[in-house]
Image 1 (cartoon, rainbow, N blue to C red):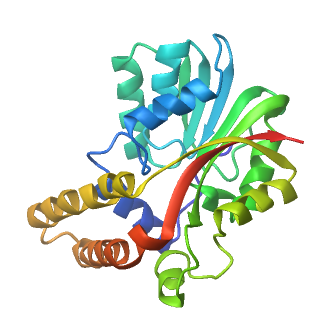
Image 2 (cartoon, one colour):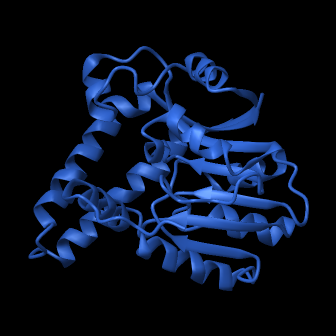
Length: 258
């Protein structure tokens, strides 16, 4: 089992940005409670099934689904802050005996091969250096007849260069919705289903962080990371208003190995 490796300064700052900005979130993606529940229904989860969630955040998906479907799970995340919240939530939902949370780098975590009915990575395909690499990581612990759940951004319409720079930095980081499906096929997975976020879902995820960060900055003006946090807030707000709502989509895709 891999332990968290020392974070580079840029990685440390990125992690802290999200720990602060998402302090009031349970679902750390542009997904509503209803869509998370819908996804669980789509997955046809049965009691006793096992799920591995890579970069699980606060573990809301594992905890909620275990409470509803009586399945078992392992959540892996590098953030001690998020995992503390995940474990508290598992106690609250009375599923702590079925859900284990492990602090580790999800990109190097050594999971048992062919051991899970569901392997998920929701909105964190950076753990494998992109979509293809993350799907490759997910394949090994997944049973042959299991399903993979991957949350990924896509372009809803061809973006201008400024939008690409604002969200991904490289032109080929994301694709169109159909282009994303082609990437699944190239990686050896069949697209079975999907649940997509809408512009209002993005607002609730992104815009609700602005108030949280603003409150943190007011309460911590002398924090060493305050200046960087203020820049993070400015970029997040402007990029969503100028480009995100118009060009950037997000969804969870249900896949099966071919």
